[in-house]
Image (cartoon, rainbow, N blue to C red; front, side, top):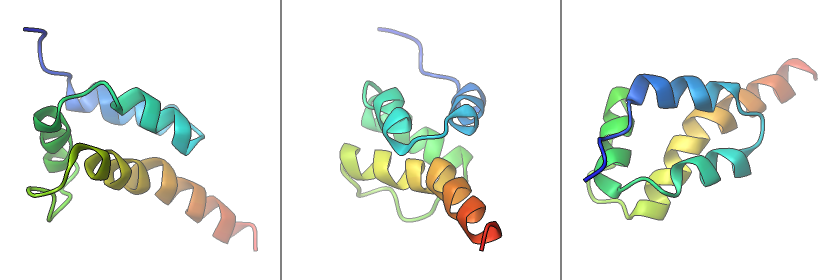
Length: 76
């Protein structure tokens, strides 16, 4: 089995991305277990029962989506 992805490295990679699609593509190969570990490292709550696609969406929303929304608000 492949080693589990490093949450700190994943957070850094997601921070460098500027498109939601890039984040989704990056996380799509991860297992649900590894996605839950990443979500826990980000202190996301309520992810225990989520399907893999929903986990990816929540993580991307919390990282790239949050940054894009913040940038859009600052430009107003």
